[in-house]
Length: 610
Image 1 (cartoon, rainbow, N blue to C red):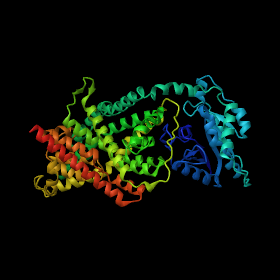
Image 2 (cartoon, helix red, strand yellow):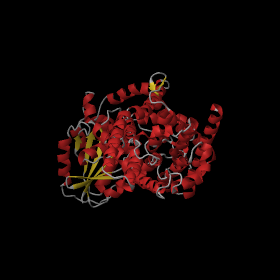
Image 3 (cartoon, rainbow, N blue to C red):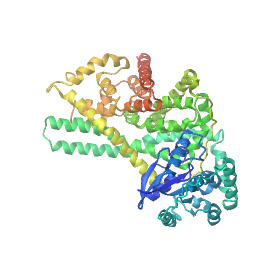
Image 4 (cartoon, helix red, strand yellow):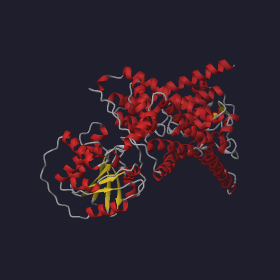
């Protein structure tokens, strides 16, 4: 299929324009380095290819090098009909650097080029004007002003792009002399001065806001407040949705149970399906709320500011400001967060970041946290008479994980070999303009986060729940403690006894190595089998009734903050580091550290409260 290439610098709105042209649900974010993979979609009869963002063809960072290689390879492809260069109308000079270089390469391959002048709505909002016709004449290629956000000029742009793609390509393979980077930079500045915004009101407005948001005092307070609201929202905003899901599961379990006669199948449906799989669905709203808040930070432009503010404190621990983005992404899932660490220029800092990302409390831990916090903290309790106490406990757990990551980063920074890098790249980060989120892609992303969590965790939890049910149900007519599962649990119980946990928790911990959220499903199955009519969505009440002590519960939840209970994360670390020894060594080290913390907490608090 013949294709149209899309190129542009980060934060130019390329991904959002791609979504508008193809209708695909691609993630759109407002910080550099978000698009490091090629994305494809269908636009009319052509394949639209969204290439990774880059500031110039003189790539400095790893993701820029990947982008440049892909741009050069795609330009040489005979199926390429048109090269679409997306420009940021509010930062025309920076955008034209890549645009001029790509145009030169495209001319050498005989490929026509069109420029999409995005964010024209922001230019109009500040009362400015861009001479797109004059810029088009100067560039020798059509320049189409548009806004992928407000859809201004999008219809005319689509028509012009399809018309150009239908033109017969004139292949002119005559090699042109390369243009020096300084010459391109000077020309782009000259073009922007002549045809672009004459008075950079957008930058002035941004600097006015940044003087407050990035201030040493107010900026720090805003950052702490934003992070606290983030973790507080995970619990409080999701509570009504969780109640709805809980009620639905309860009604479904009751309805299905009434249609089946008592026996193996009846017990399987109630205990294995609704007890195991059903009990983790109640936590999906929390994951969606987490994705929503992070998405708001990304799309508004605040995430890049947070990375800038975090650079100095993170550098003390051997990290850089770029580590903040993988760290924050790790609160959703460690897998993409480890991949996001590729954008860190320094191999030494990149390795430290990857090795400590598993300490960020990912969404898979949310079900475990929510269950144990509901057991340990009263739902109607408040902190300082204002904040929900359970939400404050969530913040404390996330904060504890971050502190552990920083402490271990400091240790790794001292002991990891320094021959990983020859030079340390300076920390350079573009601050995108403040913008309102584009709500449709954001809500699509939120919905997809819930669906992906169900698709990823659902099959694993189903297999584990069925396995636990079989081991706990047989031999027939045997009590739970005398079942196969009980025998295994009692065999390993001495290991978990110092943590104040019985054999059921030990089994659930072992099962959760496949995925942390399996812990909740495993307990749902284990406790549900003792009373099939029990409301499995009220697992927290059942755990309380079984007598989990506060010290053991606190030690258990801290265990899950530190332990690397995720086989997929181990596999990703192995792939990114190229070392099985390093990945599995990290799994063992974090497991032992988590075990020691849980034992110390249980024993010390047990001694204090005895």
